[in-house]
Amino acid sequence: MKITRAADLVSNRGPAAYFTGVVRVDELAGAAAPGSAVRVVRVAFEPGARTAWHTHPHGQILQILNGVARVQRAGEPLLEVQAGDAVWFEPGERHWHGAAPGGPMVHLAVQLADAAGQNVTWLDHVTDAEYGA
Image 1 (tube, one colour):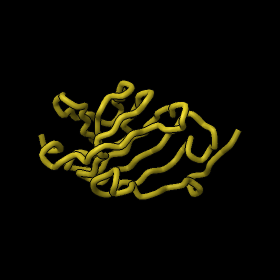
Image 2 (tube, helix red, strand yellow):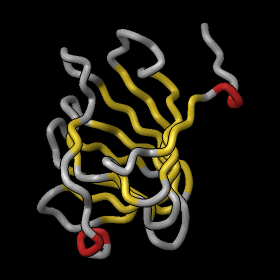
Image 3 (tube, helix red, strand yellow):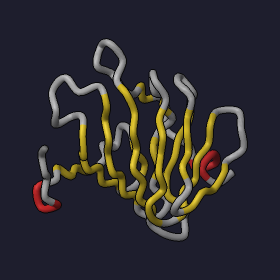
């Protein structure tokens, strides 16, 4: 058993190459455990902040912990989900997610790495028009 105290969590600002707005990413499992196939992160989005379009080789599940999230998969309408909701993105499904404009949002994200150790492929940024659709 390993206990990681809240004060010891590794929290990083989400890189501008992958996020629009202010985002904090807290590694809970995966990146800190060499050889781990699973990655679990808690991601906190300021109002209006969002990911870029991206895919996951084995899919991704989000559990919305706080606030209202906007989620969208390519070719589908934008949807809003709220605290307590879970969202599953299929393997290879092009999608994005982030906070609605009215307040912050926090979610847990869980995804598996492929044989090469990759768990995400980042694509282009979500435009303001796509975010506001």
